[in-house]
Length: 211
Image (cartoon, rainbow, N blue to C red; front, side):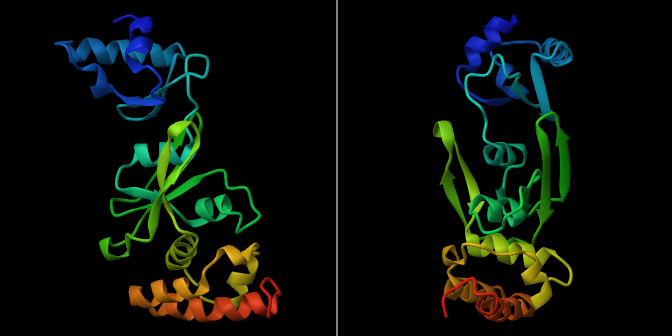
């Protein structure tokens, strides 16, 4: 298979799996050898085993990091600091894309950045939406309230006022505190219910919301 044939087959797809090329009676060993050569020559970027994207000069669409996170590990959604930063709720730039999954926790370091996947129980895998991104892409993303609850749930000792202040929450009008309290109560987690009660007080004290 020639590289221009690959470009024609991919069209505008920003990422692909090697299985995509194993059609039409192609020899799997030949395909994998060719892919390895393209990776070595810089024409392809390997994101994880059997998962690739074209180098910048060949790519027609730029893959959004959240879209990539969903593709790298299926049954996951972007959350924690990555989602909070996306919503403008925390001021920090977050270089590593953090997601939640019911699968095993993993971290992938790629040529285009880091992707971290944190494990939660199946009953806590909820509170996410399908968010439309650039170039017709979309990704599963925690709501603002769930992103904050995920962060508290997965961070030891985070259910205290000092930790909440350290987050420097801004644009708090984007948080639905009533919905957050309902989600915390539905989780059955004492840690999250304590946090929901604390958060309202912290935001008032810091004058992030109108009294």
